[in-house]
Length: 240
Image 1 (tube, rainbow, N blue to C red):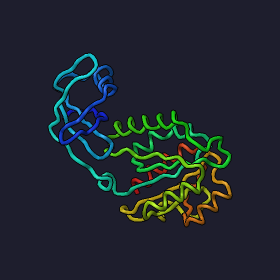
Image 2 (tube, rainbow, N blue to C red):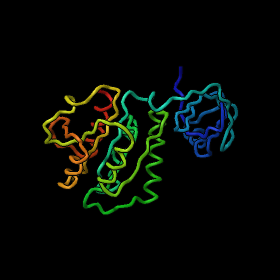
Image 3 (tube, helix red, strand yellow):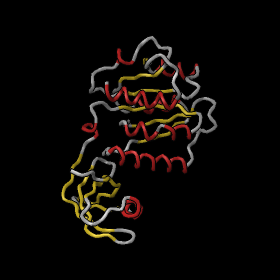
Image 4 (cartoon, rainbow, N blue to C red):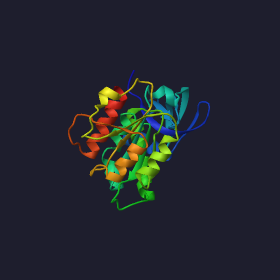
């Protein structure tokens, strides 16, 4: 079967979907799709529909959907992973956000590390992250959009995270005595993993992690850049 491009659309009802003009422009002007080409639609909330283009115009077109399926969050992955990420600047997240989404992160909690210039996230940055989420999920064909939430400090991020359910709680530390491969549990258990900013954890942040009963683990003993650490952590946590 030939490759089917996926687009973000609004699900109005059973086999009833609406594609935005922006997505139509990408389909017709960039990808040059035409009548009888098959496409996939998703709303980022678990629904996927298989459709065929029936007409095309200058800006939009029409289509008919033949089938659709709902994939629950628990069915998307055998292990749910929430990353809690420290950032001195929100723009640092831009470097690795697409990769960790494509690798399957379920939720991202970003906190302003001590010394950060910002304690609130600008609306334009939130909008940029939302575009990255949608683009990365289309690329990797994920049925669910992960949430990206911003917190003023590590304490507030941890407090919010631990209320969501039962996790194996880890934080990455190159000096830790435990190796990730030795402590990771069976595939079915969700993981809440904390990764520091470029400067690592402050003493106060380290004490917060201990107080919340997080276990320090190392990946390979090397000092990794923040972007590398986040990508490596996701690849390992999703495949161990």
